Length: 465
Ligand SMILES: [Zn+2]
Image 1 (cartoon, rainbow, N blue to C red):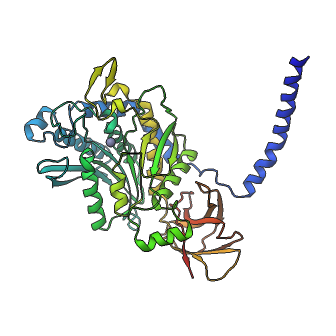
Image 2 (image 1 turned 45 degrees about the horizontal axis):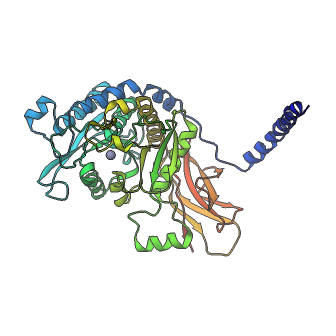
Image 3 (image 1 turned 90 degrees about the vertical axis):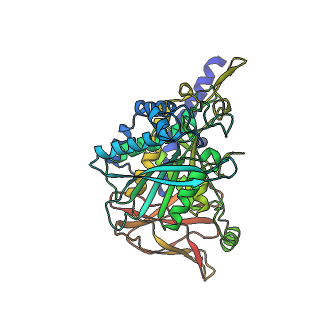
């Protein structure tokens, strides 16, 4: 008797759920909740081109150089012998050049070389070379905007100063280098109004030397970098606790480059979770809902993991929006370790621990983000929240998105306690909006939209009295 009652209760419960769910959904929709963006068929097609086999081949090639220590050999003989960081650098360059030949010379392949040291972890003057490929934007007014992806091609073993010992660096950071390369190969088949830079840096393991030099160069040249996606340890190490459906996205809250006056404003207004880097992280989360990449971003609201740093920070220090992608669960036996077996435990960052399908999925999420941003209109300028009067409505104003691509604007908002944008109000081609929500209770932002539905990064308003 008892046995039959339980299913009956379940049936009733399920019936109740089925009858109440549509009403709840309807209410949810009328509140303009964020549900993901329209997928661009060109981006969907590009993501299908990303190949786990190519990524595997590229990581294995990087490992074949034995060591990519920044302090390892880069003389012509070692390059010819395929050993050391110089050989790795030349191979990456030739790979970018090959992609460029396949797209009618669409990529400009460049190097950024400089001499560093002696400094901590670089005992003598050492040439460090970043290698990058530029896919120039096709629209003169938008081409000055840059979205950038980076991975570090240098590696290390147990000893940061070991210049000759084996340092395969398959995951750290062959994986991130392979993501930059594969995004370059696939996205170079398309054209974008804005510019995309595919970067691989050296010197990361010695102290972020390569990325620091590059970010400083970008800042002093006045480059308008809208977002930096740094991929470091995205190999999806095959360990039992790994979750291959998730990739972490780290973003700074309070900007490293904020001035005293800006910090005062953040403190007064509760702006500590609205850095430009965090807007990029939220944009990536939206990409995860829009495109089927096979991996979901897990936003982590901190600069980086405990005791660790990465190349995104070099860009943050120059005031650029930059985030870090890293696998869900790292295996410290497979990073910064000499390759060996001890008490039955295998140490070392070798390819057999890398999940190449996972790296391909991470590359898809990166490619979707790069492509969407490069197709999007310029974010609206001078976004302001009018605070002259005490009132319960909120009025926002902004300057039109330059570059002529925006056909409308959207106001986003969320509760001050919410991690992601919750609501959206679509507006026409306006530069002012009044919403019946108190600015004291929510955080607002404005973004530009083009005809095809590409969205710019949102801009959080400054108060104007
Ligand atoms: Zn690394």
